[in-house]
Amino acid sequence: PKPSDPPPPVTANQSVRAADTIPDGADALADSLLADVRTLDSTIAVDMRYRNANNFTGARLAGYEGNRALLRREAAKALARVQSSLKSEGLGLLVWDAYRPVRATRAMVEWTQTTRQEQLVRDGYIADRSKHNLGVAIDLTVVKLGTMAQLDMGTPHDEFSARAHTANATGAVAANRDKLVRAMTAQGFTNYDMEWWHFSFNVSNPIRFDMVIR
Image 1 (cartoon, rainbow, N blue to C red):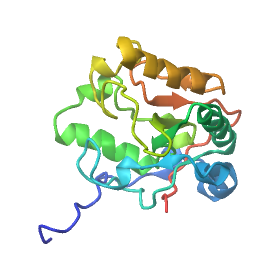
Image 2 (cartoon, one colour):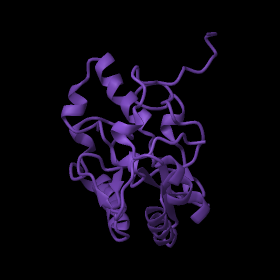
Image 3 (cartoon, rainbow, N blue to C red):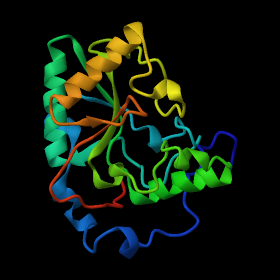
Image 4 (cartoon, one colour):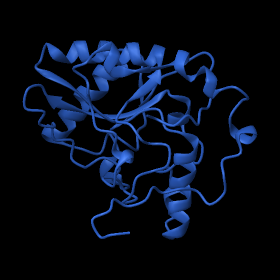
């Protein structure tokens, strides 16, 4: 490829075996079960990090083609309520990841193997079976509406260190993280304490998907 060409997507060497991880017909249900969060509130900002090279792998992940944040409909409605609660303070949400195809999760795990960073899986920073695959997890931060300036959360997205642990902050950073956690938990989300940006939502019938995001 020419130097100007975008990097190829990260893919797993072994093909995704749907029978191993995904119920038959699951992806056929995706259109009815998953909702684009911006159809519920168009002021939610979306920058899907794994659809380009601006992520920890340095390349686009397989399964990410469109800049759309999809969640199970129940979770998407709850996220819209979070956005509404923040607007009164002139704030809003910026989403970095939501539903994640199984093939992308497998590619992440393979990346840790090829780069000899398997400890990231052992230490809980990269999951081999992710709630993102169920459409019930989301990575996000808080921004100022109008300027889209991000509140200072102390670390960038996907920093694999103790600095990213939600409680590991002081001063303004701690206050900003607390604002995000309070807004999200008020609408039923649960924070992953090792990643200030990561939240999940419980649904009664979780289903794993591998549908490409377009």
